[in-house]
Length: 131
Image 1 (cartoon, rainbow, N blue to C red):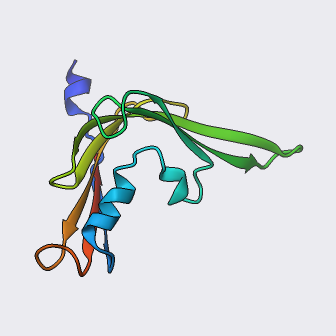
Image 2: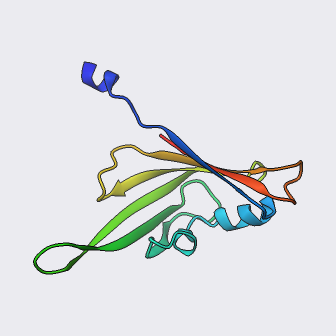
């Protein structure tokens, strides 16, 4: 029990500013099952259960890589991720990794699209944070 209480969790945040209207960026990010379209190392991503745009939506994502050995073999890394919260007005969503073969025991991330200069028509900042 004492060991569980003293284990620290990793926390991090990445940000990017883009000269694309916030609404356009949000429309792309809120489609939770299209991550393979904007992260080239993700081979596939599709809806497993739930409704698009609603908490409870689950996606399956997978990537393949070649493992160096005597005989080249493909390794598939995969995860099932679930939307915990989605707010189109605030342009943010949170999700957790439910199952995976990568080694995550606990992972929750939040993605936010923040306007630069008022309404965000001139650009926005994308913040991705995780614990």
